[in-house]
Image 1 (spheres, rainbow, N blue to C red):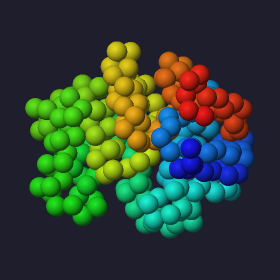
Image 2 (tube, rainbow, N blue to C red):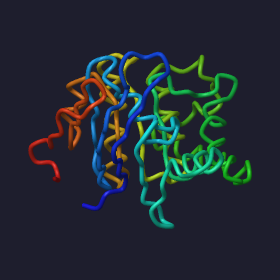
Image 3 (cartoon, helix red, strand yellow):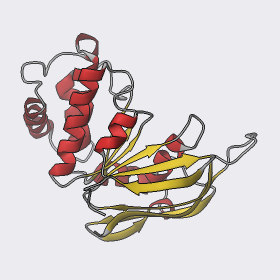
Length: 234
């Protein structure tokens, strides 16, 4: 499989921290695979995800993303360029969803398209289709406070996919959910992979990792393990 995302020599040092958050990380993510990133608290998991996604700029190293227009050096872009790349190429599902409380479920999903210049009516029609596909038909006008944790994460997954992003990043997406609801959310994320997306998920949950194609383990900012699940594509 070809690499969709490639990182080389990633280093990340926070001012005042006793040790580097990332220390020479090399990582390739193939198109169409699901990758679980695991490690103890403080191992650098979330920092790695944020650097890969262009949210944080590393102290050293490079991240290259294969786009429809060709390879792009993520951190060679300015702030506006990285924002545009995230908006057009990447989708995000975090533990708390990072949804907007003052908006309805429909509006939270539609805004991802409106930011790319899609007219509101079209964006909301597309959002309604995504919400229905994820089991939220009839709940489009509810605000987040009127949704369960699992329903809110479904809204986040719809928002992550509505732009057509090929690469999804998820940071502890089931961490605040009960086991049954968490399994349902993971089913949806892996279902996106089955439809051709690529998933990088940070998790403490060995059960989640066991369902991904590949597990990358971090310790003290370094990759100390990288294994494929039996039967997964290598």
